[in-house]
Length: 469
Image (cartoon, rainbow, N blue to C red; front, side):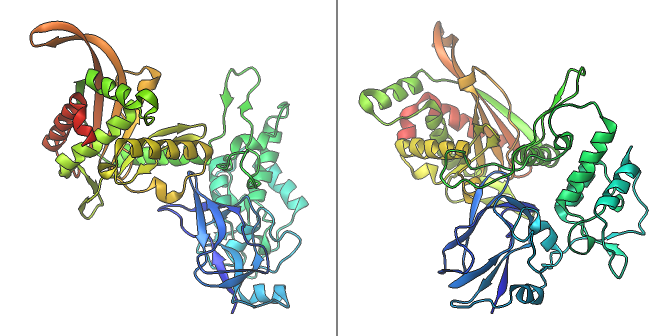
């Protein structure tokens, strides 16, 4: 019997995702555990696996389409099942019949209400929000070009994406005309209204699409050089106001996600900071010895990550996260490593760092960093762990503080190793020192615990042979 495949909730608080790729075509059989769809979040790619053998009867959205979580994206059948009347099948499942726009970008939005995804309704009787300048003319033009059929109850629906875009642009949904099924307001309706409003307000703007300045950048996590890239819509160009001396760059999905998480972190997690300085001449000598004569490619950061894992073993009270209901302590030590990419900051997680040799830590870090920059990380590789390591030493930054990466209890900010005058056994000499700052969530961790952990870390950095144990 046919059933709907819906957009899964890839990560907590995810409301939309992009249907990146269809590995299976219409009327093609698949086996249990086969990947039947690949979706993109702001930061990662996730493969959707089949729960049982079957056949993909019909794809409801095209590759590159942004879809609300819970919306129908395909129709699945049992092995050997075929469809005689597709429109009748879709109608029986509560999905709008396939038409000229079926499977095209935007179709996912119009199918969200029919698929049963819960969302608030927009009632025409609701008092409208303050009308932006020119909105009346926009509404008249939109109504004249694409009249919206009224429902029997006088109500209209809108997709979650359309509501968000309208709110960001300051548009009242009651002033928009919907071109989706039964007058449903979808993304293209909001984009059209924004374009017309900007055209009315700034008639002299000469370059680019004026609407693009107000719309969110569609995700494009797959690198251009990869085979079979997903046909993601092109990103809007930055908007420049002639003579104003400024340029607005559209906010990407990843930048918005990072901003949301960090804002949540600084507003909900009470930070405190513990700073320390280690003399790392021995650490640098150890690293030089490890890479000599074609040895494994080990960086100073790899040794720091390994030292962090050892410090967690010595002070297990730091290997925790705050869940809201409990303080969760982990058995193994997983460490997230901050990676700067063209699209924003990512923190892939290294698993079982306390049990890995330094060479394996180095290899795993290189692999994760490479795939992060290519947009090839899986969602599972961005989850877990209790501490992050952020290193700006390669940029010459000597000392800084980092914001906690939720739900981690701590993040270690690592500066550059620099030569400074140091006192050794009462004698002044030149030594190489490294400054580190530990940002800590005060909910699961007390100050004394963080101080003990910092003491253990500094000892490991100054006596690095213990890191290899």
